[in-house]
Length: 102
Image (cartoon, rainbow, N blue to C red; front, side, top):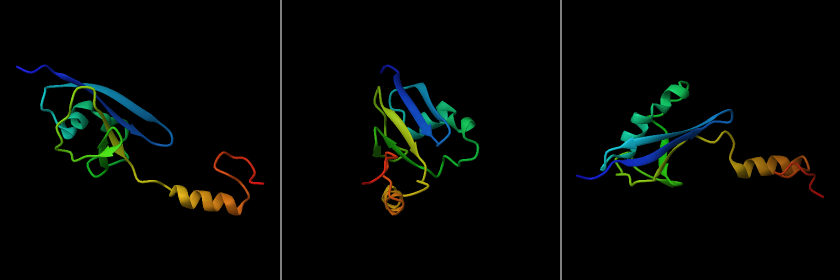
């Protein structure tokens, strides 16, 4: 009999972030972790079933089997592409750090 695994499920918006530890049976999937974390209750305005997911910063399928210590991440769409943000700031004479570009 295999031991349970411990994973984290993470989702963040501009206003809040949640990191929820979850204990699952060995062989559990990304989908199982998301479902068992109940993270959806913190973000009712998002349909978490359609967001891309990953493990430790790499895209993953929801049926991927997890290992002990994995971090499951849900990815929301960017509001503004970072390259576009830099271009807009450059037009204003600013940088991403908020300093003037001189």
